[in-house]
Structure formats: structure tokens, C-alpha cells
Image 1 (cartoon, rainbow, N blue to C red):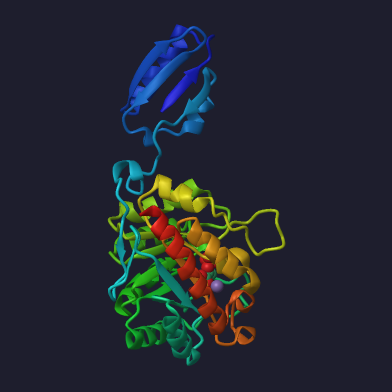
Image 2 (spheres, rainbow, N blue to C red):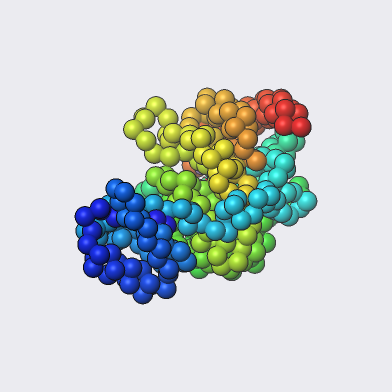
Length: 339
Ligand code: PEP
Ligand code: MN
């Protein structure tokens, strides 16, 4: 971290600042330039609040030299992380996977949807048993029995399950039900107690970007999980809230190469929540593949108009089959391009 001071700063004020920095256990290297005085802070700079430093009268500007995320940072871990999701399915580092299934687990139709998405080429089954809904009166999910439905369908088809966890008190339940991948949704992207609790397990976590979360905030959320010991984190771009109203969210596909540049963790893209409308899911799924996503999460329902949640953005199994064909075509081009 570097603090640039005003040229007018008195020797006494600089001395005072240096001892404040040293008091935090850091070293302060002062250099006097022609137009400004620069202090280089060396040590555990995360202990310093850059805004507090910048609020000091003699400080003009503060700049970070290194990112505050360490474990998620590609600088300290140059090779891609490959996350083992169970059932022989790996993601990241050249392993590409498609996660598909309904928004909500609804019971009996799950196995039929699961069979159809698997036949079309999906390798992981999704479905929410605990649903984060804007309205408390909207369908809240089947709860624990929904996890059983998922386990049953996924065992029959030998596929890993991806399902959302909303409450840190449910971690043991998710472990007992042998959930392969715990999803942390956009609304919980900064639920720090939840992030820490899933971090104490070794179960892979699909971590979605918050609705108004920056790339750095997503990486810091990953850091919360990893700082507790769980390195099996998969990042997910699912669209962010902007001024645009023609789509449910704005799909920030920049985030895919940006996350790959900054981090070694696998990056999945979710064109369903990002667009909110069935008609836009396929083109944006293809765009995400072209942008280098390590996987996709796509909502599929046997009868979208009867879906208990997110019917508008759910593909029919037939549409999903066609989308998978095109995904394979795009992948064939970009994979051979990289070789
Ligand atoms: C979901 O996957 O159904 C979901 C609620 O996603 P998000 O958290 O991205 O809105
Ligand atoms: Mn959904």
C-alpha cells in the first residue's frame, strides 16, 4: 500500500503518521519527491483501512499495491484449480461442465427432467430445495424433502447435485444428505456467517456473484470460504442489477475473463438468471462459452408455464437439447483454438 502525502505536510505531521503506521505493526518507508512525499507501507496492510488513511489531512491519495484476496489470487497460485464435484465430475482447468435442472425441486417431475438433461449432455443436476424469494408469500421450496428428491434422482443417474444453502444452521443437513455442491446464491453472496460455515467443510461451493457485487467483492466472498480451509470454490457470474429493464439482470460477461485473470478458481456462467427470459438463454449461453467459462448453469423445466419458480427463464428439455448441440459446437472451436 502506498500513501501519497501533500507536499505541504510538515515534518512533524509525517512523523506522527509514520508512528501511527508502525503502531499497527507495519513498516513505513518515506521518500521525498519533488512534488510529493510518498510513504510505502510494508507488512500486513489488510490491517489498515485505506479510507481512514485517506481521510487524514496530510494524505492526498492511497493506492493498494496488492489485492486483499490471497488464497483466491492467481498471483500466488498460477495454475487453474480443478474442483472435484464427485461422481467423476471435475470442473476447471479445461474440464467444462453443464449444470441443469429446474429452479425449484417440485417433487415427482424431477427425475424426468434429470433424465432428459443428462441425455442431452448435462453432467450435473441442479434444483433448489430452499428458495430465496423476494416475497415471503412466494413458494419457499420443499426444504429437506427436496434434498432427498435430488439425491434419489442424482444417484439413479450417477450425477453430482448442485443445490442452494441459505442458512448456516443447515450445513450439517447438507452433509447428512450428501449434497455434492452447495450453492450460495446472489442474495447471500455477502452472508459472512454462511460463507464461513461452508468454509469449514470440504464440500465444493458454487458461489454466485451478488446482485450488485463487484468482481472484487465476489473474490473476497470466495476468500471468506477459503480462509476457513475450503479451497473447493467455483465462482459464478449470474448477472448484475443495472439500469437496464429489458432483461432481468445484465449479464456481465467481462467478469469471465476478468475472474480468470485475477483468480485460479473455476468460473461458471448462469445465462438463465442473467437474462430472465427463455429466448435469450441460448445466445448468452453460447457467448459465455466463447468468453471462456468453465461451465454453465441453466434452468430447465418439463413444463415451464407450470414451474413453481422462474418459469419464464426455464428452457424446455427440447430447447435444452438444441442449446447443448450448439454449446458443443462453440466448445469445439474454442478448445481447438487454444491448443
Ligand atoms: C437459483 O439458482 O435459482 C437462484 C436463486 O440464483 P441466484 O442466487 O443467482 O438468483
Ligand atoms: Mn432460479
